[in-house]
Length: 546
Image 1 (cartoon, helix red, strand yellow):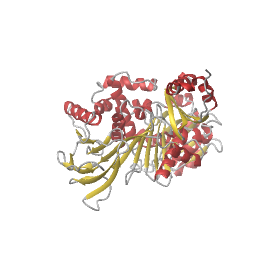
Image 2: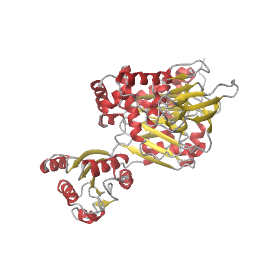
Image 3: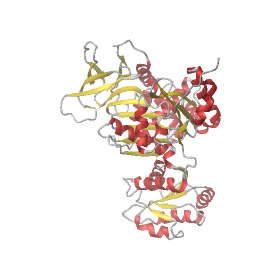
Image 4: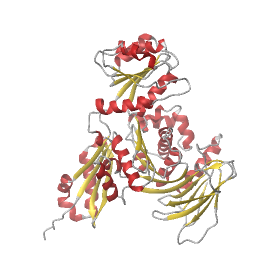
């Protein structure tokens, strides 16, 4: 008996990162486009292994596809994005490490550049050592900074002279981000058109302004360094997809994509406009560079081992970012590092007025072993004040969809609405209040459920109310003395509608930022209580408290 010929409508969505490659198969199922297979593997394994994993899933789902499936996949349309293949390398030379140097470095990293070398006039090295370092470094751009706007600093000219001595004529472009009064003097040290001036990153000792430098370096990265079709760069396509999702849903959305080496943040408004930031060292491999990283992560995790053990995990992530945690302690350290990196990523985001939806992307967050772990990373890292929905993109579909043309992005998001995101649930996050006193009193009304007494959450507590995917609930929120949920209080009660997910409704009165006990035993007990409250199963209608 001959095998019947099977017709298929397929498309491949592919996201090739620096450490992990992800691919999904979109197929028409009963007249609707659905995500029918998904696989992820280290990028170094190659395309053949990824294709084999997809084929195995498809044939297991429908054996009729076996004989012809490989040819169908080969002919399928490809929707692809990737991490920039040639990341920009920059050397920062400044007067002061703590002032102009740190501001210039933050501006460069926020534009997606990797800082290969930071040389300052107060770094303790001799002039000969500084010159030797700069002559040896290979970079795609130089950034110079120094001096305040209330006067010219001769030391800033000294920093510029270092670069002029080390840089080859006709070499990488030079960006002056110091005092405007010295711009001409700096330009005179280089050949014509070698330098560009932007606003001072540190106009006075108490204020930094890295945004003009970031914007200039971001444009330079796209045009001069990463000579690729920028719409297919993940750092461009992910924000475009989040912006399109905000426009179609009418929500204010904060998206965070925590990769192996870099991280992307996008804040999209309901009209589809968005502001994005790419942090070149914001991925897991960069956690080791955070100030006091090992001690802070050990303290934040509570169950990841001592400082030395955490430091070993961080060094492994730096050297081999595709490594998967092999023990509970390694997983705890990795997820605590993710929470710290998210905090740094959203630190200067303009989230005044709150956001309606937080989306987590990147393998560590979106593919966490348990949904509660993803929820905890987003809640602890982002601290979205107010009433917020939280979801993840486990199939890495947003990035590829964002590489389509504008109208097609919105169409793709609409067609894949059922599989685009996995909802974790909703959260009510507050700040302020007195320890041990009532912070939130929340009445939850679920259609079809009997009425329940209000739920009281004390300052420092976290409580989970079961609310499944697709379920809605009406909330009446009352706050305690000195407690805020971000919105102006026009009445003693706040009303909101929330949707459920794989975790449920989280009532979070742990504050912004989260406060932890000083004593180690107390801190570990509190952290374990929060973790268990999020993770453990509860009978319908039973709340989980910590």
